[in-house]
Image (cartoon, rainbow, N blue to C red; front, top):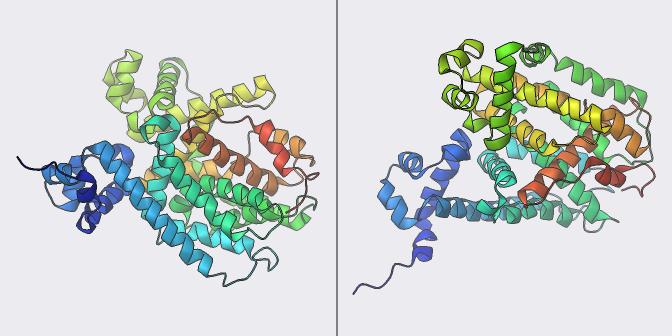
Length: 398
């Protein structure tokens, strides 16, 4: 009788890295939902049976992808840290530049890994038990900044703050990194995040930040126009059904047929009100945002259900990366990142409303990134007030 097949040995054979890398490319191009043994076989130019024999089923392939990303993350971190060459980045004033450069790397030479990690984190935020190794991948990102800042007082907290901010910013850097105004807005946000919390911003810096927010209103005009139109009648009912589908299964679950089944209406009726897939997504997203705004008003800013918004914004940025038709919406989500809660967050951290919009935006983004990670680890996201104390001007500065 033949000895049993050692699948781990087969899976880890150097020749099979090509299969795993083909899976990573598929995820980057089609999303995690679009990865199957068939799509990977097409990308790798081999049979499904060969992949099944060498790697296993789809779950085994996802696990192999995570292992590959862990190895790549370690190599990337070592290469990035080597650039410091013994220099302490906070004392040298280099930290904002390093954070911006790291995000540029994720949108450039590390783009596939960055998208794969975003897709895995998003999937884990909905089904953490299905991908239990994702927290290990997220830990690698935090470890980079902890290693860089180990000599800094309270360096672990600063590292975790940067990690959380980058987790939220990363999909936008991937989708919008070619836009000069976005890159300038991002750098303004990074500087605000890392500024001594006891220091008020220069008035000109605040004006500059908000001018960038306003400049991005042009490229996001399609999304703004969609947001201004509140549907009525059957279209409003359909929009709510679309929102429910997004909350339950994500944007990837949307189609005219799926909305028709969920609403009990004919697919032709759905197509009448929402002619394209893009229209369906916009309709559902705006319905979710209207719910969020109503929740914020009713709950004095604690934003119940914010986990859905966290997932939605990341998914929309990733969708824009695959389909340029969604770029206006991704731009709009990024430019108004703190719009709905800036008043409450300013109050929590002890700054006058509208006095430091860049810092409020940076804090909100770090909070969103933190909450996404908590969801990916299988827990409920913490309410914003419980986290805001870490960014108060009364706290010890970095």
